[in-house]
Amino acid sequence: MAIASKATQEFIPIKEIRDGVVILKDNSLHIILMASTLNFALKSEDEQTAILMQYQNFLNSLDFSVQFFVESRKLNIGPYIATLKNAEEEQANELLKIQTREYIEFVKNFVKSTNIVAKTFYVTVAYNPSVFGINNKGFLGDIGKKFTSKSDSAPGERFEEHVLQLQQRASVVQQGLAGAGVRTVALNTEELIELFYKLFNPGELEKEIK
Image 1 (tube, helix red, strand yellow):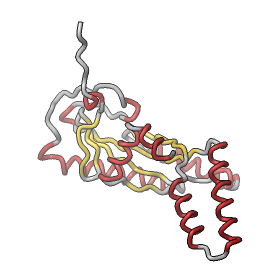
Image 2 (cartoon, rainbow, N blue to C red):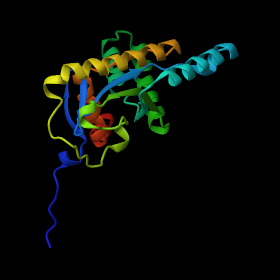
Image 3 (cartoon, rainbow, N blue to C red):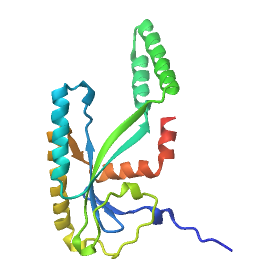
């Protein structure tokens, strides 16, 4: 008995990305914020307590759900190595040229023998138009599952109104995290496409690193 294969797109929950907003197949809207890191261990005890209290107050003040996720990728040293090689070629001093070449080999061997991972932190803010009767929830944890929507229609004419509501939520999150010392910036359309391409095609990134 022949088994009909499904297109890969059927398993991707994203319907469209436009104006810096991710629209899922269930018609919910999402803004993704990239967050800065905070070296908590280097803070004094009083500073740590203040940060924790501020973060707790921020979470308690929310009347909608947010999703935090971390993207871990093997560090890509390709651009850095290319910069070093250019410096080596332009170096007039033969001794410095040799030292640069040796340093390049050291960096390559070090990264190869040590599992160095680059981490990027994101916050997903969602808004689900009430007309669709959908509960607020994150979507990254549902990647790979087939989404079914109650309506095939996009937010349509009310898109700008819904985006405004979403942006207001994102602003609340940004201000709350800023109080805890974490800076955030919303990803634009191009950055969102790049992010999801990497999430859905991890093998391509590995080829790029090699």
